[in-house]
Image (cartoon, rainbow over all chains, first blue to last red; front, top):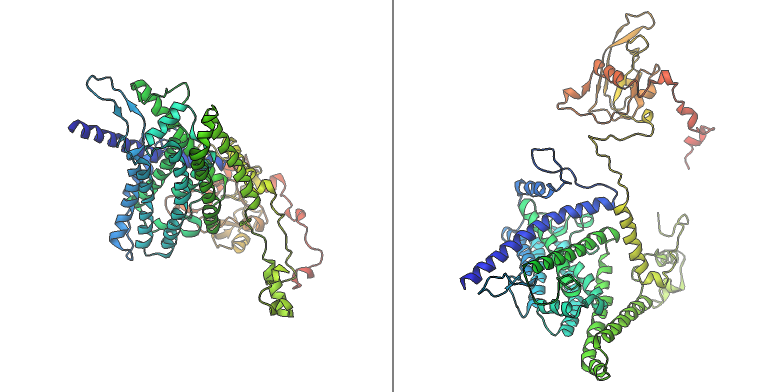
Length: 421
Length: 194
């Protein structure tokens, strides 16, 4: 029992240290990528203190952190002090708690009498997926508390946007998850990873539609551009964290980065095969020490690749307008999620027995069905969907003004709008 | 302007075709554009180590200098045209009778308050003898306000420092800016109110 507690504490310590360092250095990477995309060099000066050695600016996160720690923590007089102080903590705890169930595989330490150590803080947790998304969704409490307690209209707008956005995108996210859980037959993340490793077919290949829905929704949940409506420096002066400074602000910013890492981690675990890579990591559940290191490296590399895509995407596509954001969630994404769930349910109820009775192997057929569905849904959505991104000039207003000046029969009948004529 | 004004020219966007409605080409365009810049050449000048190279340093409006004539004397004749033209009132001249026979006056004190200066170059335009000119030095800094008031010796030393790279106007033949600008033939055009 004691050894279990000690091992768990060590895991938590290692994981927290790794996460904090990763968040700090990803801020640096984000600034580099932002700079490179804009033809700049980015932070490259800060190196070892008191020397002239610049290690590509790798000292920058330490300098940033020190700056924020030593800054004055200004609390405006008009805030609700209790909630104002609680909000960053809630956000941070929600962002970190997710990692309790992230599986990195199990390792056999080679010590006699020791069972293989599972590299998860909470190993073999049956409802891991549900916990993961419950904890992730709890982050919106922090946003709402911050926005409300700041007693500032911009903050409140940011908080309301954040709440609406998270609620909207939870649905496609959950639909994609339901589809995946239907396919895997379990809610244990380590089992989902293990299934991908054993079959050698990652879920992105098998379920492209679920992947697209999940990816978009996860980006929106993480509040990354093009979905960063809760903060939008240009519109809301920083949104829910407008009134925060110093360490509290840093807590928010770190939580935000943790959310992005969470999104990347979950995408890697559920769709990109977790720690599995062909011909390199093997597919057995327990690895030796060397194998475990290789698996962790593969996993981290995959997560970093997805994080890079997030940062790259941020500068490639413009931010959505709020109505576009809502339309995207409620119309295409939810429909796609429902389509994917339906396909999988029907597959297990009728089609799979049929395919197996024919003597075919079921995975290629399922993949084919999923890909055809994916392409068909995309094309049909493109063909059918109303172009709600219409920015064409409002001629109807012009016509209305002319009609009001000159008199028009359209003004007499309220059923015919001038723009219809 | 009202929305039904006849001066408004309405431009229609062409309707989205099937490819554009699927958004895939647009996603691709965005990603490839940023990626090209991501790996492309960078424009940053690493300032203290490298310095920005001006295509033509002679037209840059940086720190002022007071030119010397061939005999090394200050070229200024203390006519106060620059101080008069200066919109920021940053030039302070004290004139005295000239000890030299070729001019009436010369400046005993010639101070430019660099903190007030807006680097518009009007003093250079106004000067009848090309005595005050703006150089391409752009990184001026100081630790006090007093330090930022440049006196005659300082301005002359800037001339000594920059005369090789940027020869004074009366040596290179002043650029005839008036020739480059086409002034309207009929001055009435400017005053007519439409």
